[in-house]
Image 1 (cartoon, one colour):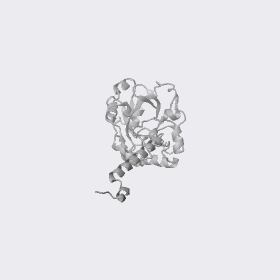
Image 2: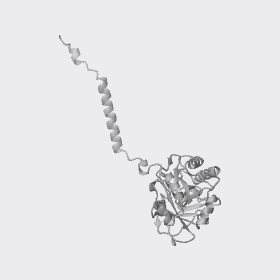
Image 3: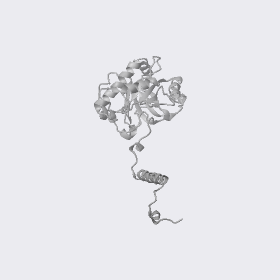
Image 4: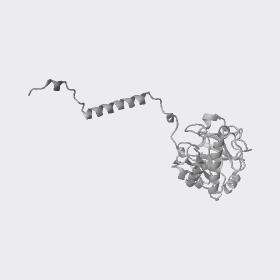
Length: 282
């Protein structure tokens, strides 16, 4: 059968499947090139949410310079703080070494609870210690009241048994982004107040505030209004507590090292054991 010349010269329509394959290959190459040439995301520089712990930013921002001048002073009582990093804690050894009180991380934001909380919280109690829980604040995620509720609902409550201290608000450098969580000093003070008010409403107790003076001055404008009600737990890895945030004339607790025996974080309660019991009883 003869073939007409016009049929030989007519352009052939590309096959639909071929067009689709070509488009996919082109898009894949473009995405690959973008991944190879784009800078790493800023989030890659931060740890995963939920991994924060008390004192996480102290060394990086304030450094570490010695230990307390009199580590065995009779008017200072040894304590520890722990989080999921420590796993199952050897509470018996800590007790034998003079540790009389302990705080366990219970929660962070409204998205994390400590998987080791039960062993740590109950284990310290069973060893004879006065115990309590702390909450790592993330003021950039949800309101203070919302986080206070999450904390109380996940181990941060209080009971008048002489063995449970009021819960602690861990408010310090943001490990996941901007130091002050993107808040102005007045907004930060409002967030903290919201948390403290809700915690007291739920438990009847004023929460302990854990912080570092340098962070407090930068991120709250050195606000002094919480000092009359909320005990201060100061973070400073040095031979003395140094300058305290405005309003507080003394610290109730002092985190003085992150490299102590057994668990790392060690603290001094500013008084003998009977004063710890008094705080526990309210």
